[in-house]
Image 1 (tube, rainbow, N blue to C red):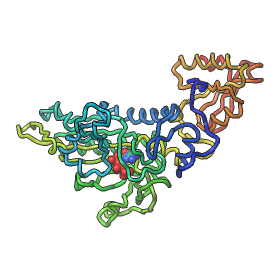
Image 2: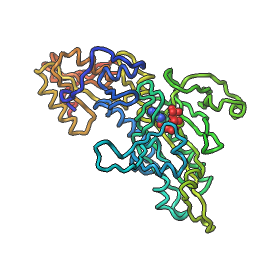
Image 3: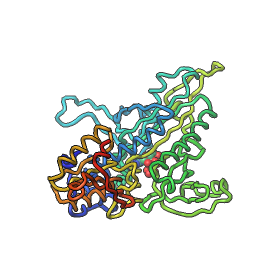
Image 4: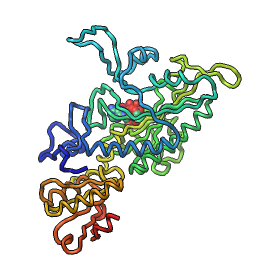
Length: 414
Ligand code: ATP
Ligand code: MG
């Protein structure tokens, strides 16, 4: 990307009406555009950050299963069938009719807030026998929830991103094994996203799906909306909603500490709630008909982005983890004089598929340096003035350590 083509500009002042630091920073620096409370457009640089986070999630999930994309819109019947039309308070409903439409039909639709109710009939149509199981399917998609109070930027959005995975099993053992496996996959994902140390596997309510607990992945952070009790040694936690003698007894040696946290992921045993509701059976090895056992596994990538910024940002450096910076390298050309040389290097590195952008905007070097520091490109390649003139060199600066190195441009192009 040539930054001169980026239409987004940084603003001089903090936006009004935002209470969280991250929302203020991200709006001001042209990462997000606020449509309304809890609804934000991802501007180009921020979209790259989102894609990097989602691709890290994909990489770990794809080692095991496949991705699909379900519809965001569904017929109301899908929710009537599972009995959830009346029970989910955040469900967003919409009607197909409008004032000028010739189609005055009274079709009612739902903007999906989760997809158990959609995936179950899809899988049902392909599964007949125990030999067809297990099935696992996931997607990454926008979800809609009419949250009463959309706060802290998109920490709690009304439209937000979710990676949702669903699994269907013939036996309880197979489900258990997969569920435990997902705990380790999730731990790996949060580790790679740089929030492993702050993220706790947390016992939480199984709601009306199961008498067992569900497991949340809670990241300790001051803007988090949940209260959890953490035990540092075991990296386990208990959500306040199930904090009682029964749960405490499961960890007799724990040293509990109360803290606020944000739920970045949640895995859920669903038993046969949805397969029964949709009349989904398979023929088992002993020729009897059974309902598959189901689990669901969610992560909120847009919430994860927000949490990462909230944890690591300071006024001079917004996106700290290297692997989610919008670009790995930024080439900064100082003045028009060096633009041609800088653009040549940029073209060479792009051709090598490096994750690189060039700051070819018509502005002074200090403003470019400040932006590069703030956005947090891990490596800056600065081309200009004396260094180039004398040795055809550039200065390579490490954002994290501040170390500078003179390198021959010809060597970087190799
Ligand atoms: P919360 O308790 O925060 O309302 P939830 O338990 O209702 O979340 P799940 O249905 O478990 O959420 O959704 C899976 C994941 O999607 C959550 O762990 C979270 O990371 C993310 N998520 C849920 N609701 C929102 C939201 N309103 N905005 C952004 N991310 C969300
Ligand atoms: Mg949850």
